Image (tube, rainbow, N blue to C red; front, side, top):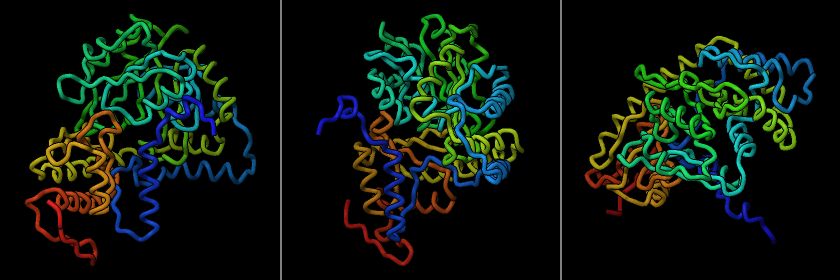
Amino acid sequence: MSISIIGRSIAESATLKLNETFAILKAKGEPVIHLGGGEPKSKAPIDAITAIASHLNTGEVRYAPADGTIDMKKSVIRYTMEHYGRKVEPENIIVSSGAKQALMVALQAILDPQDEVIFPAPYWVSYTEMVKLCGAVPVPVVPEDGTFTPRMQDIEQNVTSYTKAIIINSPNNPSGAVYPESFIREIVEFCEKKNIYLIMDDIYHLLVYNGVKVANPFDYAKDFTDNSKLIIINGVSKAYAMTGFRIGWAIGNKKLIEVMANIQGHQTSGPSVLLQKAAIGAINGVQSSIDSLRATLENNRKVLVEQLNAFSGVHLLPPDGTFYTFADFSAYEKDSTKLSKFLLDKVKVLTMPGVEFGMEGYLRISFCGSIKDITEGIERMKWAIDPDSPNELYIGERKLVRDWN
């Protein structure tokens, strides 16, 4: 069988594989706890549900325009004005089947083979593979100061004549770091000066804690013409807890959005009209669900940080946003894949290996589940790897005895 060079180079999505593993174990009746998940457990906003139900009852479910319906674009315009203070036109917007597709289509529209795309580490697992799907070269940049916050000198040292784009994800998946306003200002100004595309992956920008403010890239941009290289990616998946609805969007210059729409039109056509109706309902409806989700996550975050700080060997920078912690477990095991598999095999707890995000020795642990899952999951993990823990552990009525060092 002949497989393309690009096809052979693409790795399986580690996060989707983890979800599949969880579903299989759950179906078998295993007492598995998922601490690697990337979706809130709260329900979608009622306004989203009523909007989709109302349209479904009409029976008029047809093709959508390749770049999204005008009503959906109006909602994005409203969202952008409310959260970014910037008025954009319908021609500046493409609506896609999730923020992931919006990002993928943007990369396909701007990248040529051998172009380079820079992004700080730790990074979302799909960035490397999406860039490779375009025949381009991913360039992860690990901050030299040992934190999760990139510095301009880290970025500049990796810029070459092949650099076409920089991706910034703040709040960051997996670390939960919110990049400082000074860095966002510098990166916006740098990209405009160097004529490099700046892709802001803002999917978590409403999920921040302790009064932390997410910097607005529009505040520092000067070029809003059709030569603008600023692209904003967003969607309803995280803040509205609508992961399965698969509606996201990109905002960019009109020429770029036109090219992206042409590409998307041949890939998938426009996103589902029904799902766009749901997203419209969520964005235009009562926004209390976001406040409720944020309050729940903030409490979960507090519990998880306290639990992890009880490990003598875990180093943790508490997250300011998202619903993840990225904790350094290298004192127990430097191979994060090996450690993650060990925790699954021994105590049925799923975590994400840090190596998938570009940093070895770490585990991404999610706090978007229940308090019960967080406390019980961390208790199991501590029993499995902390030599000072009691020798026995009960999972339900099952008694486990630690027979390893």
